[in-house]
Image (cartoon, rainbow, N blue to C red; front, side, top):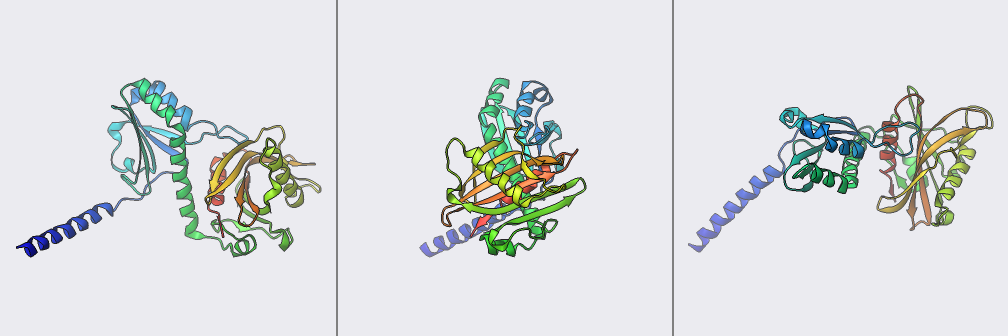
Length: 329
């Protein structure tokens, strides 16, 4: 009798595990939507009052470091009654509801990959409080979602980067639409220029290393970073006129942050570049100093774009996604 009970329990357990496994591995459609885009599921009345204004202040805030005003995300409002079918497959969705105060981030609810954020409150004031309290987490969740999507797309057609990996001891994933520019540096310089031509100009990533003592973390950290990048521009990034070169635009105050890349402390600087000495060219840049204590150095990775008269947000985001794929070996 005891053996029979154990056998029944075992069969029931196995059956339950299989059912649970099927549920956890259920087939979901591919998510949809361009990068830097968020669907806002919210009642029309809330969207048109101060709740909508609060959402726009957070998700459509101007991006730091661009030479024109562009929003963090393009946003589109969806009334709850039409949030069904393929509309639910948006990769990034913010859902606003009236009810008990709550903030929740969920993944892969209706599609894969998908990031859905639910915010609720009993009234307008409480909903706005939830949005403002969690605004950094909201932006971070959607941005990380788009970074992962972009990096996944890059891996579908990777460019061979063995020469970079061998010289700098890092791995970086970038698509074959980019090329490693003809070397303008000596092998011992360990300097690389990755670039892609676009209809209105070009986008670029620079990779090199500097000693760990090149940055002294005091009040002049920004000036130290800019001094290094300007010296690199003068040495390697010549402009269209003889004697011209890329430098930092001194009329625009750069933005500096602390972040993490490859689990390593990283200094991030956003600003504008110009060409000095005889040419009118400019654009945004984003520079990362990745601390590599093991090898007593910083890996420096910079993305910059030249794309006059067009939006630069998505170009710069692609460069950021490339740089954040770096792994130090």
